[in-house]
Image (cartoon, rainbow, N blue to C red):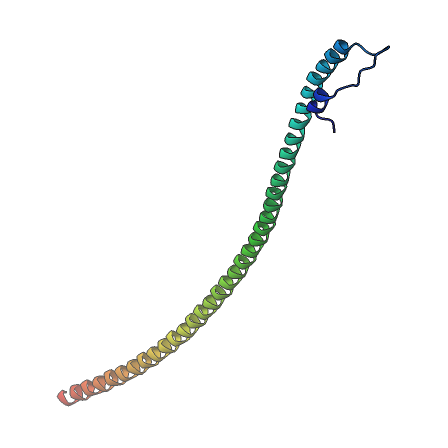
Length: 151
């Protein structure tokens, strides 16, 4: 690529006849150098800007990839946590059912024991009642005998 310095330093050989006006060629080359310098600087700046933008683009692509992998990892972790929570909930439910079943069984056993105890007390009461009845009858007989003797 021709640089502005190349244009500025360009020298043409001069011909004696029918040659270009040196002054006009120099003026034209000066104008061309100014425009070319401006365009050259602008192209250089644009190349630098494109390189900078490409670098930024790569940086943002890296960030995007990181965010995507982080999102996937977060989703996986959330699913794992959900599954663990579900398993723990099932375990708690099973333990609660087991505990409830044991309590029901214990209460059934206690009810049976209380019923047996009640039956035993009823039997004891019936026995006591029969003894008292027998005692009262014998006492009544005694009183009758005592009354017969007094008469």
